[in-house]
Length: 376
Image (tube, rainbow, N blue to C red; front, side, top):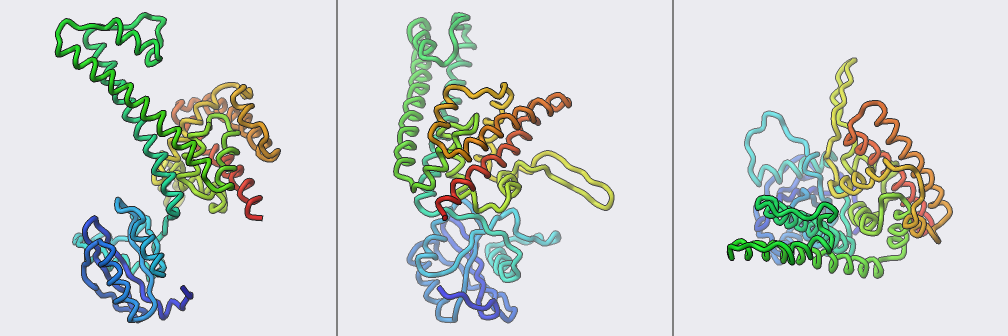
């Protein structure tokens, strides 16, 4: 689609819901009018596009939400330029107490024309598929944790405790539960069997999803595969973590600086400053929570001495020397940072958050180093 002057382009705001889409148009001359509400169905969207195309060039926007990117991909196929907007960054009037779908669509169209909206990165269909698979595995891990808690608290409530040398949730632990824990009441025995079956089912589900993630990575583009392998050079980031980072972020080189990646994760400090006063609080958390969780978990590994383990050494083999140099620098730098912050009296959680934020800088450096070679 050819680029046109903003003086001739109309800006369309779409307030998207599961069943309906409210449509408003901001004309180049200043008028903002409601077009009405259509069904959120492929046929209705095609009719809307045909209708709006009759009056000239236009481009659309809508807020990111539970409906995903299906509308974006459909409009792109129809040749319409579209942007998905960050909902938390849409300007609102403090005194406006009336909210309707029509007014929301008009507000989007007006702000879109003024250039006051912030677009989010939209993955392609294949990248979104990998992200869905990774998040399915994350959901399975949460389900496993809940299933273990149910079984563990059930055993604790009835005073059934394993031998001291038996580590919980190992294969030997589950064998002990199935062999040694027996209830006289049949109802309680059925309850125990159900809890044990759920724990085992979750473990099988996670194993299956991890095998499917391995298969998905093997069929991924070469540049993506190389970035996933390179990120594993960092301590605390193995295959699943590396795949999660790439699936959530996309191309790391789309961020001009590591600070932008830190802001995308929501791991930067909040600030409320006025005049001569500067006040900083906790992290904003207005970013990708999945990415923030991964780097937060990896940050805890930096409390150990900067020694290259056997597993880490195997992951670093055959990698580019530049990537190995970055990983070595990160190994020493992050541990030093962890110890320094801890010695200042910071809580371990604050330290892990700060180290995780700094770790994003090394993740960015590795991603840019790898992607630049494929772009050349």
